[in-house]
Length: 327
Image 1 (cartoon, one colour):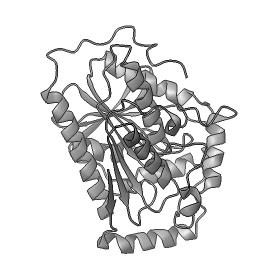
Image 2 (cartoon, one colour):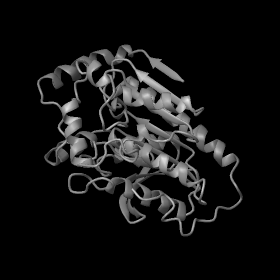
Image 3 (cartoon, one colour):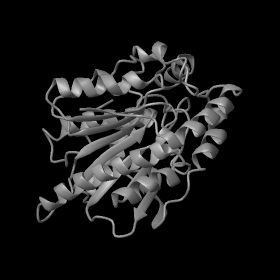
Image 4 (cartoon, one colour):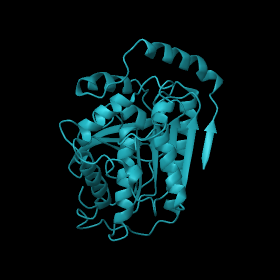
């Protein structure tokens, strides 16, 4: 199901100003030297009210807990930050993810997965698997996987792996996935890479190609663990997509949603007129507020339905460390 959102009147002036500002600046480059600036940008998101933050380690991987008051017990969102596998950090994303956690009323763990080029593929996937297994072993039986941009692609890669694993192992199946502007095709074959190039003030095909090279190196870019668009969509739980119409990665969401629906799955695709890559992180925009409200409502509905049908006891999975396969 696709929902098209017209640009909000209150956002037009803000987007004109944003585009004017970005037009005189170099477009985003995915190189390690850009990490401080990228983190500084993400840290500008206001702190969510009623959320506490706690550094922690799950499955041997560091990250941050965002814990709203009165979080639903036994439930967790595992979040993968954006940055094309080269930039970003759990620390910088605390405020933005805290907004989502507050809206959902569910504790959320932001994963500080290893970045390229210091750590090549499949290091990030290995970290994602380790965190999911660690949460399951800790007794969390209701899990949603989420992320944005490169982290959205990583979230969907993990969704494919975990959905396949529950068929042969006692792992809890993810309830759903929520992704914002996910990068699902590192082979860069989407039509929007060219069609939306003139509208996208942030991303370029060249920058994404460079990031893919840093992350994957000489390995196959169509490996579903790197590019989940090429994976098996059968049996996936519902997936919620939010994507800007004016971004070159638009087709990474449209094609993924279409392939889910082609095998009988449920995909909710929201396309936002005039919006750019990961626009939801700019909560000064009315479109961002509406998108975050929609995400929160989807998450609350998902978790409440699962909680209402919960088993009396959940026994942490033992010996599950190999159940997600080798990358």
